[in-house]
Amino acid sequence: MLSVVTTAEPRTQKGRATRERLLTCARDVAIANDGHIEIAWVAQAAGVVPSLVNRYFGTRAGLVSALLDDFYHRLHIEVLDLDLDDLGTWAQHERSRLERGVHFHYTDPMAVIIYTRLSREPEVALTENRHVDSVVKHAAASIRRGQKRCELPSSIDPELAGAAMFGAMQRVMVTALGRTPRPRPDRIIDVLWRQVAAAVDIDPQARA
Image 1 (cartoon, rainbow, N blue to C red):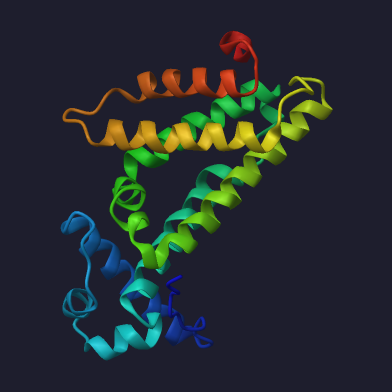
Image 2 (cartoon, helix red, strand yellow):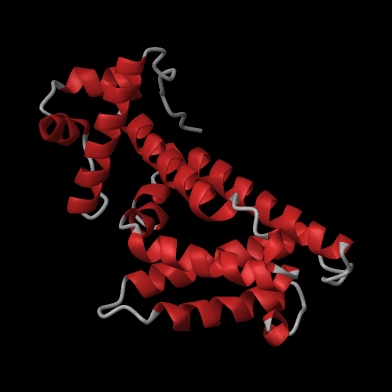
């Protein structure tokens, strides 16, 4: 199996700032080129020599993996890791989380690139799998909390339901974001909420 050559996180503030600037340039290059990216292109965009990009990311695969890490880190901060329990029942706060998730994908141009172009590269498959596993585990933990509060059926397998929920999110978002014009976000939310409700065996109107 192919492995990704990466480097350790910079220890100095200057080093972290340089890495972040290169990562921002890499993100811009990937967006501008429909997911295609090369070390030389990022170096040119950043006004540096290619060896500096290699210094911080190791290889092209390491750079792409860093882009995946950055995307999923933002997804966790803006959507997955939010504590929404005070919004009411499991159905109510997870409907709210879904709405935030759809908004995140609609406003982040890296979403469709991550789910299509970049995650399909053999060298970064392990990185993508690691992040998907993390998202599924997060969803499963949420389902277990709902089961403990007797808001979800105890017969539901949390991991399988979590995988179904995120799998639906990925594929529906790829289809929606690839359309011109894009479907209205509220329509996507309704479609995905029905998938979530089916995965955990509740009435889609339970959020009301």
